[in-house]
Amino acid sequence: MRAPNQAGAHSGKQTKQQHEPSSVAGLPARQAAAKLLSAVVDAHTSMDGLTDEDNGHPAYRALDGRDRALVRAILLSALRRRGTIAAAIAAQLERPLPGNALALDHLLHVAATQILFLDVPDRAAVDLAVEQAKADPRTRRFDKLVNGVLRSIVRQKAAILASPPVPDVPDWFVARLVEAYGTSKAEAILEAHRTEAPVDFTVKADPEAWAERLGGIVMPTGTVRVARPGGPISTLPGYDDGAWWVQDAAAALPARLMGDVAGLHVADLCAAPGGKTAQLIHAGARVTALDVSRNRLKRLRANLDRLGLEATVLEADLAKFEPDQLFDAVLLDAPCSSTGTIRRHPDVAWSKTPEEIAKLAAVQARLLDHAVRMVKPGGHVVFSNCSLHPLEGEQLLQTVLAERDDLALEPIEPAAFPELASFITASGAVRTTPADLPHADPALSGMDGFFAARLRRLG
Ligand SMILES: C[S@@+](CC[C@H](N)C(=O)[O-])C[C@H]1O[C@@H](n2cnc3c(N)ncnc32)[C@H](O)[C@@H]1O
Image (cartoon, rainbow, N blue to C red; front, top):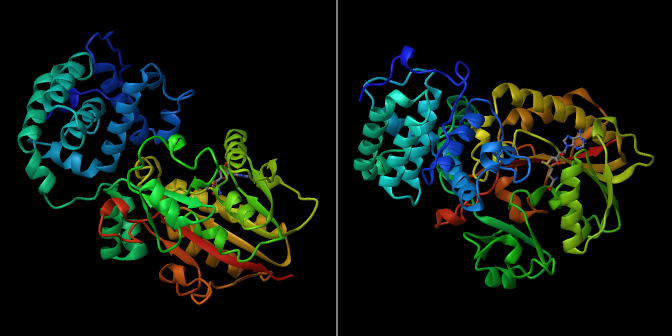
């Protein structure tokens, strides 16, 4: 198949997209999927924002519930398997698409995703893609190429899916993983990323009984894990009674590193939507939960209400916050690149950039400085985030500790936390990745990438 030449394809930047009104069923959903895919990979926008039911992308909000669900499904698979899909498309072309053929590229990705990974009839995926190409001046002349490439992918589907895996994240991301974890662990992380994450629950009590009721298993760390819950979360048993909350197995670890917090006044900084706040209150702490985001604090309040738990909630920017008292202990679950959550949010690998990771590391160092000032001398500060990149974890901590003499790392002892032993690093911090907590069933494997360290304020 011949790829279009540079002159024949126009980038979104050069030509305004002019969609003709479409009466073809299913076409608006595919058009919206291509627009949102472009927003993630070209404009580095997060999928959560684009698919927000009230404030999301207009093309998404114009769809009904069924089409919105289809767009989300297309995007999740298109981003999770982007390398595989790109390779399948490239293999059908005599030469690569030019870099400015973005609209055509996104259209092909959206259609190939449906053919390879979704339960959409192949014929519908191909025909709608051809219609989509014809409806857009940037792609109109390539309708035959679209048809040929996609039909070829349909014919080769089994072989494509059986071929050796290629990375489904950008090259820089692979390089960072290899640098941090070595080739074989990096490959295991990339493999874990290919399967959708299970749903994890932190339960107030009796994990075995809840695992049975929810149709899941109890993980070695105490989290209840369900591969495919039988319906929306809010319809599951125990939801209305506040018996549990959804929280990845790795996200449940940092609060536990604070040890026995019963009776202590603990500040949960960067607290929303409140998973760790709930753990701390449930463990007997008096908790002040602070976050800068009003919307996210609304979710925190709703979550605590449902769980029947109480905290003092503060809307404030931690970087400017001056407490009128010092806390016994502080948890800082800092805003980060979220690259540890790639299985749940496959857009993260494509929407984040190395520059952003460096900036976020600097923000976190500043927030940690404020967090330390808020704890009484002798008190614990647990610092955590859901990044896979050492720049935001191991390296950040090393720099902070080298710069200040009022802070010491208090290593996590495997004897005190035997269930965490395999995640404890040589220096006594906790590091998890999606390749950890393996299970024979990939749908029950893995956990988010997290870094957590326990520090003590000395003076
Ligand atoms: C990783 S999330 C926290 C997740 C939460 N700890 C939990 O377990 O549910 C990071 C949070 O940091 C908040 N945040 C970002 N910058 C902040 C700042 N300068 N001050 C306070 N909160 C901030 C964000 O609004 C976000 O809710």
